[in-house]
Image 1 (cartoon, helix red, strand yellow):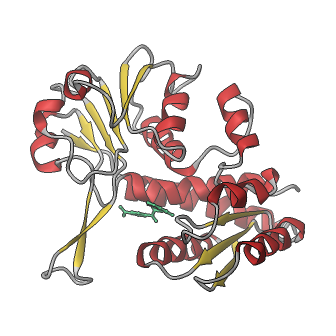
Image 2 (cartoon, rainbow, N blue to C red):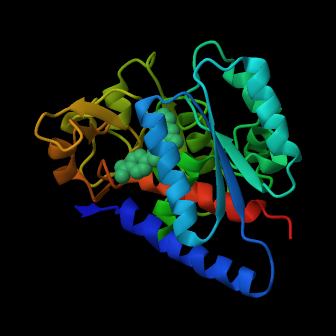
Length: 289
Ligand code: BQF
C-alpha cells in the first residue's frame, strides 16, 4: 500500500505556481488576484476560506477576503458579486459554500461572471466541462485528477466507480474520468444513495472514488484487493484529546481498507489540500494578460 500524499503534492504545485508568479512579476506583469466571499462564520467554511487566502499569500497571489454578515440579504450578496464581476483588478473569485439557508446557491452561482468563476460551478462552465472544452474545472474533482496524474496512476480502460452524485464532486468526477485523455478513458460507474447492492459494484472497482458524505461508510468488504481508493469525504468528529477538540475522518474506514489497496489517500492530507492547489491553478489561468 502506498499513500497518495495530497499535502506534499499540493505543496509541489504551490511552489511551481510561486515560481511562475515571480517570473511574471519580474517582467512587470500583474500577480493573479483571487477574491473570496464568506457569508457568516460557519466554523468549517472559515477554516477553508482562510486556508485559501493563506495559500495565495504564500505563492505571491493577491487576495481579497470579502466577509459578509450571516444575515445579509440575497439582493445585497448579489450586489457584492456584481462588484467583483466588474472589478478589473480581480481575476477570479469564489463564493464559499455552504451559504445560509435564506440564500439560493443556484442564483448566486448564476450571478458569477463565468470568466471569473474559478470554482467552475457556473452552468456555462459545467457545460463546457461536459463537452470537453477549455474551462475552469471544479477544484475537488480536478484535484483528484491532478493527484492521479502526478502519481502516474493508469486509468485507461480501468473500471472506475464513483460513489456520490453531487454537482460539486461525484457528477463532475464521473465526467472527467470517462472523458478522452489522461487521466481519463476509464469505464465509469456512478453509484449513489439509491443504488441497490452498492458493495457488489464497488468491489469490482480498480479505482474507487468516494464522495458520499457518510463517515467511514466504505469498509474492507466493499473494496477489491489492489484497488486505488480516493477518499473525498471530510468529517469533523469530536475528540477531546485533539488540539481543536475534533479530528478529521473520511468516507472510507482507512484502518481496515488501506491494507487492501495499491494506493489510498489519507484524511487529512489527501484530497483536501489538492482542492486548494487546483483553485490556485485555476486562478493562475484566470489572468487575462
Ligand atoms: C486536509 C469543503 C465540504 C463542504 C465545503 C486540507 C481542506 C480540507 C482538508 C480544504 C472543503 C474541503 C473545502 C484538508 C476546501 C477541502 O488537510 O485534509 C484542505 O480547505 N477544503 C471548501 O472550501 O468547502 C467545502 C468540504
